[in-house]
Length: 120
Image: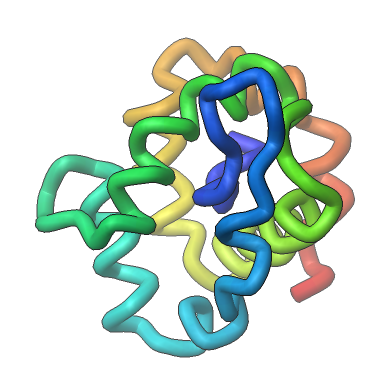
């Protein structure tokens, strides 16, 4: 689940910076916004255009270690992961169950996940 926040990776072979200016902090600081994105990803709620893009691209980003992401997108993803792991483990677990039921990505990114624990 290391790239759970990669709303911004695109399935094309080239990277886009379209989502580089999304205010990740604003989303993380708003329970309503964060829950909206998570509900979208889990299929429990409606998706904004950005949420829909995330839902479509997250599997590719996880599978290919976010290689199509810009540096800014990777930084945003790291920030979201740190927040979810440390402050919203309930949401992290729900997302992991949906996007990593066989624990493949949790195992692949174990060192990165462990490194952010306690560093909110």
